[in-house]
Length: 199
Image 1 (tube, one colour):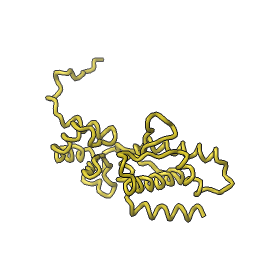
Image 2: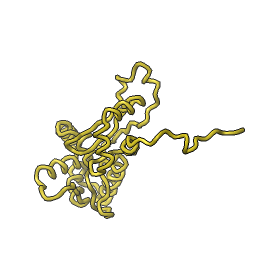
Image 3: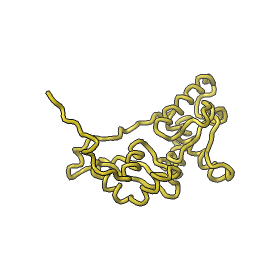
Image 4: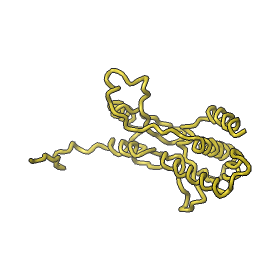
């Protein structure tokens, strides 16, 4: 049995469009990735068409300097598009992860309103833990709560909402993607529901 392979010479001529396309498939494309970002802005309509063919929607937030892909909603998957397999799996967040999103989004709001000296929203686990404890019974063991908090941060890291800052496990950067995924109007509603659940 023989298998045909594509030789390098058989590939189409290189197109710069591929650079932002691959970055987007890897996750979030930020404006500080200058070459890929500039290509995205110059070829945005081409990228929109390119990704639409596989059921993905390109979201470009110029104000925040980032772009990412979203799966087209099930309600809009018709005309044959419903036959496409989902590229991105839906992630269902539990209580702890949702709570952490709310706390971190609140930190990002404060950072934007009050911290004019820094370019990044950095949170310290010890300070975050104090807010975290308010949503759990007072008799809960603090060591266990800290472990839950760190596990939550690790799960949100996989979603590109946070990343470790400077290699220290106790210091994390809140990424702009969390702001895009959790707007302020949703933040207030979620916080109220979590507080009610905690009580």
